[in-house]
Length: 424
Ligand SMILES: Cc1cc2nc3c(=O)[nH]c(=O)nc-3n(C[C@H](O)[C@H](O)[C@H](O)COP(=O)(O)OP(=O)(O)OC[C@H]3O[C@@H](n4cnc5c(N)ncnc54)[C@H](O)[C@@H]3O)c2cc1C
Image (cartoon, rainbow, N blue to C red; front, side, top):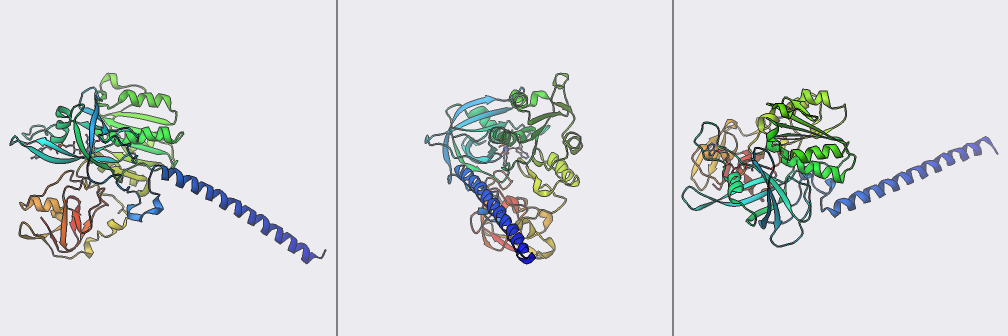
């Protein structure tokens, strides 16, 4: 054999091995891809690359409009009796579609009005348990008037606590929302403040059963132990699952609160830095706006990438990120490129007014000019303030949970991009 033919044999042998290696790798990836596709299809959850980038995390509502549910059970969840869970079963008896842990329901309620009649209001409540086919659960905190004010107590939450009973019928939209846990195996940190525990309970319960072994931490901040929601459930999970790490953080602890999982003080990033090993965690945060306003920028300062920080506030919120978010919707928010003199025309009210960024979103702008608009959550979640745009364009700070119909906008979370005429 000549040295040339020997060389050819060696090269062909290497090429053959390479081809076999590539073929086997491709086949394995193909099998993994198919397994992932069919497991996601079973849950009816769109795969990320099946939907446009902006809506990659959105999920199509499982039913359109409102569906009637009956309250099957009511359970008080904390020692101070301010949080009550409602177990809801569909009146039509059909199995329930799954949802993504972290999503919420939208309720249309007929609550008593001061006039003696009823008034229709819309409110959103997070699902507080993992998906199951027979019922949904929400856990609602009774909202009191601000201290030293004469305002009436929260209408929806007090209506739920005082007037919604076992057997009551409620109108609900399908689960929806962009704030939900990812399906990867990445380690995850859940951070809850007060009633912000509800979506975390859903994520936690789902993760522990569906993703065995995934490292999961829960930092749960309240003032003292009597405010803890589902305390014994959380402690039982921490005892049962070695991959679940529970930290109960008390800003004003009572002596009896300090136990195995307790920490004295609020949840903040210095605590996370002490407690968490260095790993590429995903952070999910839900709590009062001041908590989000301090934790989100601090995580960014710590070097956590934007794509690993997910948060939701229950109500009007405008968490300013240190680094601008990179979604297409946010990129549109270029104040410098906006028209310098924007005029907003409220067609039905017959008012034409100059708008400045300091005037806030279009709902606030309407209200401050005596224009009354129906609203619910003031957070882009419920769709109550959806209004037709007759001319012009709007910007959203981040994609709203409720997808406005074509030619309409959600006044509570948008600002004018150009001079605009809206039907209000
Ligand atoms: C996506 C999402 C998920 C949510 N999930 C949950 C959840 O799981 N659990 C939960 O408990 N909540 C949740 N919320 C919050 C919930 O939707 C309601 O905002 C909350 O229950 C308060 O509604 P309410 O009708 O009881 O209070 P409202 O009637 O809206 O009143 C709110 C506060 O304003 C005060 N007030 C009344 N009138 C005035 C006035 N004229 N001026 C100033 N203040 C006034 C009231 O006294 C009260 O303190 C969620 C919100 C969103 C957006």
